[in-house]
Every structure is written in structure tokens, then in C-alpha cells.
Length: 364
Image (tube, rainbow, N blue to C red; front, side):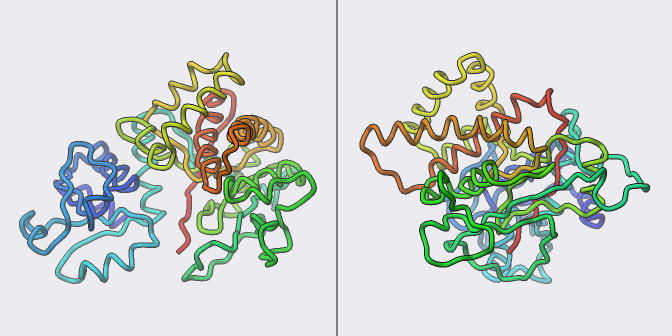
């Protein structure tokens, strides 16, 4: 990280490979924190670009690389594509580039948010050298959603003992991926194709108890050390969230990539009916410039329960609406709306809860 930061302090212009949400976020940081000019977004296909921010997108080629005078290239895509990109574009000794991995992305985004507004991270929490193991008898459980449809990971990772694998969608298959499964009487395991990892969230809400409860995925986890856990508990933190994504011109640019305008209309009608008193604030949140993706969080048990009450009150109404219309859905629409509801819930309570942000590690 230090060598990258040292280089960035000296650089006046870069090209970014990527034109999705990761690339847009890194572009914002480089401009706002370092004053770096973004020459262009290099892409493999112009049809798959989403964020331009007034900056030209160019299909990458040797000719374009030299046309831009051999710039430093920042590869800002999800990490699972890094190896393929390096090989396909012949990045090597003749081309200087940096890969934005989970750690670099987190460090850069953290600097951006701290410059813009009060923003607490786990690293900001004071140390307590007297803490031993888990403080005051409190426990933490983070449930990792795993599915038979997951792409296999290329690498092996050591998962902390407070992270508990849970088979998501167990009711839809004869296979069993872990000792803990999301199927139980009254559960929603069989609706996993609509709810995705939220079938595990529902299982945790109804079947588990711990001082702190959380959700992550087989490919995306919180990068927290044992000392971080001690600090979270000793400092009485209410909620841990990943760093939010920036969106342009507002959050709708991100969620309308996955959500139809028709589904959004149904969603807002239900919000208006269930949470009329908060509707104006919710609309403001949905038109802000950030969103918490991936349905990831860790929260005190009582807050986790409040979150689930809010989350599933809306999602169950959406599901009921389509059933009344005689429409059978087998897409991920409720999982995507879960991300919006996660953003809404913790934004509504940002003054009520003591929230700290942690690194999201992308497993490849």
C-alpha cells in the first residue's frame, strides 16, 4: 500500500482499466484526494460500460495505450478478473500498472470518505491492551452464505472461527454443503432463487443467538482480526458495515442496473404504505450518491433483529404482490432489493447507531 500511495502522490494523470462501479469509485478518489487527472477509462467492450463521469471510455488497444503516451494504468475491476486482464492485455514489464485489490480499494475509499464527512473505521477504534479473548463474555457469529451454484474459488483461505458457513437454498438440492443449513419449518430456504443470501439472514434471525450477528458470502467476507473483534466489543460498536460504493449521478445509477423500473414502482408503493412517516427521508437516501452493496453487516443482536424486521416486512410484501398478480419469479430481485433496504435502514439510523466500517475482502 505505501509504495502505491507514494507513487500516487507524484503522478498527475492515469488511465483506469474498467468502467463499472469499482472504476468509478477509484476515479473519484484519485481526483478528490490526489488531484490526479483521469485520462480515460479503458474497457474491453463499450457496450458494458456504466460509469463515465464525463470521462471518455476507450476500447483498450496498443494504439490507444501509446496515443495516451503510455500512462500508468490502474486496473479497477473485481479481483476475480485481474489475472485474465493481465494476460489478455499483455500487461508486463513495459507497462506500469497497479491492481486495485480489496486492501488498496479499502484504503483509498477510506481516505475519500474521511475527507468528505465524519467516517469511522475499525482502525480508528482505540486499542485496549488489557482485553483477553472475547470481551465481557460477549460472542460474535457471522454467517457465511454458501450455495451449490457458487463458482469455485481458485485459492484456499483460512476462515476465522467466528465465521460460520451456512448452506443457502438447502431445500432446493439433495446436496449438503455445511452442517448449518437455512432450511427449517417456517423458513424461506425454498425461495433462495429470489432471496439469495437473505435466506441465511432469515435463518439467523429466527434460529440463532449471539451478542453480535452478521452476514457475509462465500466470496466476500469482512477482513477482521482477533484484535479488531476485541476493539469492536470493548468500544461498544453497534454495527459494522463495509465501505459503501459511490454512485453517479446518484444511487439509482447502480441499482437500476439490476432492478427494473416496474419493480421499483412496486417497491416504492410498499414503502409508502408501510413506512409513510419515513418516506421522504427514504427517497432522499435512494437519491444520495452511495449504496451499501452485498447485504453484508455485523450488528448487535437487537439491532440485527430490528434490521430483519424492516427488511423482511418490505420483501414479503413485494413477494405477495407478485403472487397476487399470478406472477412466478425465479430471478434475484428480492436479493437486489435487500441491498437497497440495507442502505435505507442504516442510513435512517446513522445517528442512532454507533457504526464503524471494515474492509471487505474479495475472495478469488
